Length: 394
Figure 1: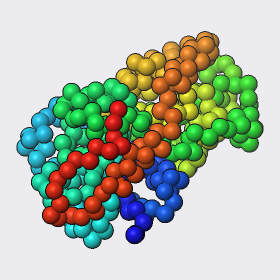
Figure 2 (figure 1 turned 180 degrees about the vertical axis):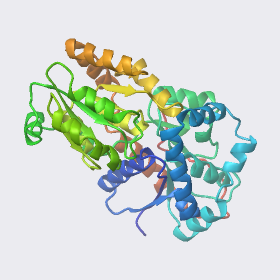
Figure 3 (figure 1 turned 135 degrees about the horizontal axis):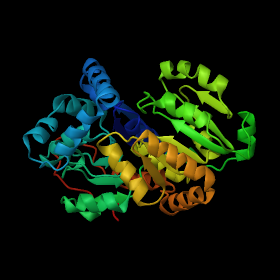
Figure 4 (figure 1 turned 90 degrees about the vertical axis):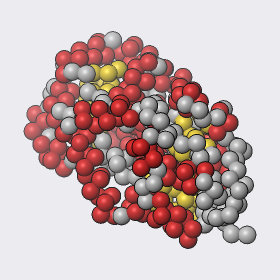
């Protein structure tokens, strides 16, 4: 009998979809070391050139005209499954996907990106695909693009998202509330004082972690870094610029002239370590960043959330008491000064994060995935459509 074979589809539109996939893969390797795991960029399966064009267009819209994205997001949030737009998306690259899957013959398919999940769900409902599909919703909100009745199991981040799916007709038995999957390394404890010392930072100062995302989509990042670097009070800052090399270089004068200790990084793969030593994170509200911060019990300040899913994620953070939203420059300044003078507010947010923290989220999600995979007939054609309910329940 061949080893279990798991196909994971993500997408490189931002980093959340990829990070969720990588978290699941890490947990899969821990729980099923012999499994064959194939991780693909979904749209690149259709066309690498098209994927590059769509990715650069998406990032450009988010960085320069975010309101345009917001209008699209909200106008399509409640569209019907049989709408013209959704029917078009559900046929996008279907032949390339079915040919790829036929050659690979996986036992289960995991999708962290909604478009590919919709295409495969339609094939599932038509009886053309006999392999179970797991969809991982990578935000703390529900959008119509995620909702497909041919999906066997939904992995979601909160009971609120589960209720939203059920209100749109998804069966409770097809939903697993595990938390948005976070890499298991975010569960590790760290020696905070030792790591602060290694970075040349002080243990008695309030440590702000500023993250703008891999592609630098956090607005007014240089202004914000300069603000924190020169705040009055015992504070210090860690700044992660990602792949925004222009931002990194522009911070030369900020770091040199800062009143407070400042450390900056470009792209790194150990954000978990920085979250372990920070007291507050200032960031965009991507679903994975939120989930990682909650796991680390790290209070979150969202600065000028991007309209759409990130704005909804920010609202969720504020509703559960684990963070604050600064919609203007003045609001950010006010929040920072308030927290510096009232550290008990930081502790309150950390405690709220601890109560809602999705501990061991990737491991819980993997348990549901493996139960589906082990029951999979791993055939493409001629298999009776049978929504497998094992291992996927609330």
